[in-house]
Every structure is written in C-alpha cells, then in structure tokens.
Figure 1 (cartoon, rainbow, N blue to C red):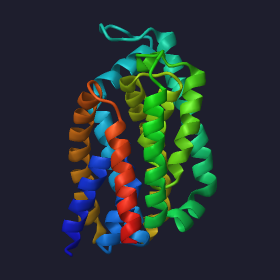
Figure 2: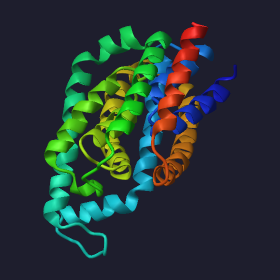
Figure 3: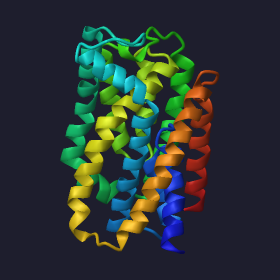
Length: 271
C-alpha cells in the first residue's frame, strides 16, 4: 500500500482513538499489523503523530490554558479566571499525577515495547479495560467534584497511579485516567477534562523521549510521511475532542466498554 495512504489511515486512527477510552496505541498496533507497517520506523511514526493529537488539545482548550496561565501569574481579569491559589494547586496536581507513569515509563519503556506491543496483548488489555469501564460506571454513581480545577492533590495522585495502567498497550491512557477520576469522585466531564490536561505533559514527554532515541535512524524521505500523519491526526483529534465533550454531557462510558470487549474478542478469534 502507498506510504502516504498508510500515513493518512494511521493519522485518522490516532486522531479518533487518542482521547477516547479505547486505546490509541492498541489500535495503531492492530492497524500497523494489518497494513504491514511495523518495525522501528513504524513505532517512531506512531509516537510522532501523537504529537499532532496533543497539539489539538492545546488548541481546543487554549482559552482554559490561557486563563490558567494568567491566574498563575496573578493576572486574573476575565470572568473565568481562577484564584491564584486554586490555579497553583491544580497545576501542582497535574505535576503530581504525571510523575508515577513518567517514572515507570522511563524505567521500563524498552521492556514494555519489546514484550507487550503485540496484537494478543492488546486484545486482552482491551477486554480487561472494557470490563473495568462497565464495573466502574455501575459502582461510581455519586461524584463529589464537578469542576476540574477543584480537584485535590490526593485525588490527582491517585489518577496518576491509574495512568500507570496505560503503559500496557490496549489499556488506554484516557480510559485509565478517566476511570481513575470517576473512582476518586470526579464527575464524567471533570474526569475527561483532567485527563486531557494530564495528557499534555505525559504525551509531550513520551513523544520527545521516543523521538530522541529514533531520530538518528530517520531520513529526509520520511518527512512527508510523518508530516502527513501529523496533520491528519491534529485535525481529526480536534474534531473528536469536541464531539467527545458533547457526548459525555448526555451519556456515560458504557458504550466504550462494550466496544472494547467486542473488539478484543474479535481480535482473539482472528488470531
């Protein structure tokens, strides 16, 4: 298949799945497997197009980010600005939530990539994560926190611990953090928003770490392929974020749980 077409397909897959609780890494592994796009360069491509998705978060939440920065600098001035102490606590909470998976990812990244990046692992992780979504949705019905910025440092830490499950391909970073948010008492919207904001340092760090390792093996001919996937991922992710935030205001996450279970079972049958 033409490399540009492959990059477009994978960019679409990344943009759709990165912020839905269905595992973008798992879907990229599966898509790459069936498109015969695997290996070291494919792994670098997958990481690179994730950067397009995270820039979509910066674009979509640009006003909230700007208000947060203004509040941190002690320069409120908009109706939506936060008190400086709340802005500082929220920012510290993001840092605290980032640390657990960053440490584990740094220590075990190579081992995880070598041993777990297979369709069978993805299939089992999709099923386990899907069951977890169904259970958590049924058990966590009384949220206590309805505004993302009001989350406590303790809750931030436990969401960070939950994010560690996303190191297993197929578990999903967004599923791990959103479900972790529901477990500690956030409502669906606040949990999703916190997941998006936590994605910013997490994905930037993972992307830069992986690209620095793979950069010497890339050549100028890869620029078009990587650039195409990046742009497609950015556009699709922005649209998906907007649709997802509208969706969870009226619906729960059960449909994603069932989707994961069904897809995982189909993969196991095909394998």
